[in-house]
Image 1 (cartoon, rainbow, N blue to C red):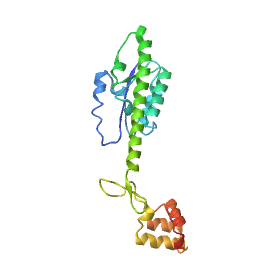
Image 2: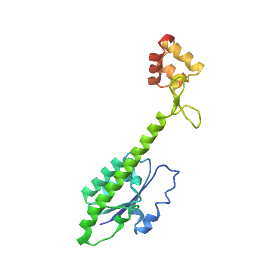
Image 3: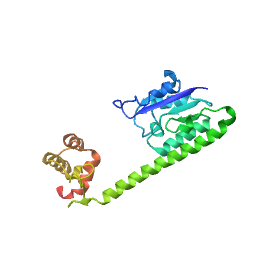
Image 4: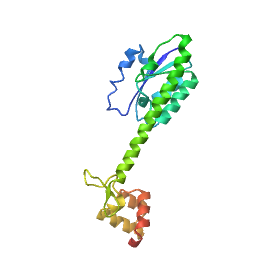
Amino acid sequence: MRKYLYLRTSCDSQSISRQLPLIEKYGLRKSDTFIDKATGKNFERPQYQALKSEIQTGDTLIIKSIDRLGRNKQQSLNELREFKEKGVRIIVDDIPTTQIEVDEKNKLMLDMINNILIEVYTTLAEEELNRTKERQIEGYKSLEKDNKGRLISKKTNKVVGRTNKQENLTKEQERYIKAWLNKSIKLADCIKFTNLSRATLYRIKENKKDWV
């Protein structure tokens, strides 16, 4: 039975130093440590997939916290359940109870407690994420709108969110789009000269029928 450590940072520039002490803490070898420098949006990460293919029944997986496994709490819980079904013990360093070493007689009871703790912890994190989203929605609803119906930030007094490309066309872009709409140039040339996508151009075509 072996112990494995999984570490993840969101990007190359982000320091992983906060998680490295776990190697010494749990007496691991570098060959037992898998590190991904990738977003936690999904689980198609090379080192994580390599870990899953190597870890076996009876082994132990150590992570610093559940969010290091992945950003989506429900998906993270599904991954933890998959490890549990495979017979892999999970140690979440931020959940102290999961760190306890026990003899075989008490192992079943501890694993049951660990399963409950991990599910409760993950559910609470998911609920907090949902509450954050709800607060964001409520915040957007409280914002004033300009004459075009766009939300205006109270702090910066600027439009919230991405700029609407259709409403912020340059004179040069308008000239090329009108030429395309009047069939003076091809769509490919219009895309090239305006630096707009095919989808955006067709939306403009639908909304600017008076240009033809």
